[in-house]
Amino acid sequence: MPDFRCKAEEHALEMAPQESCGVVVNGEYRRCRNIAAHPENDFCLDPRDYAMARLYGKLEAIVHSHPQGGPASEADLKAQKQSKLTWHIYSIPEAQWSTINP
Image (cartoon, rainbow, N blue to C red; front, side):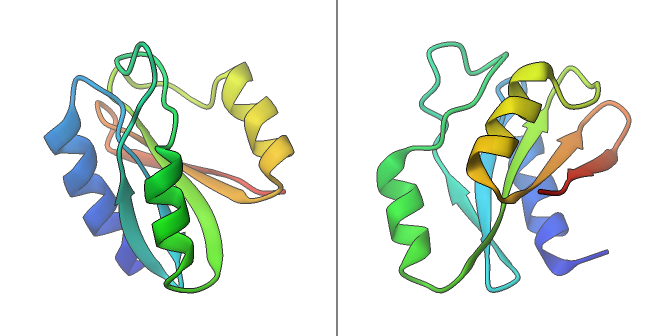
């Protein structure tokens, strides 16, 4: 398991029942605040956190959790295509990861 996943799982469990979010920069997970209007069902990376993370190197992926479980939503798939980045989603109840590649 890539190292970033352990830190992302910890973050997801801490934030439940809200979705956690972050980015992978140079193989390392960097937490971001979720500023979504309804963080129990959605996520929106805080733009300041996103900008700060980019100062540390190459942005490789976006990461978020699904506290209620389940695969990528239609909104996730659409946003991933727009971002042109790899997305990793951690489903808490199943303790499973899914990845969407560009």
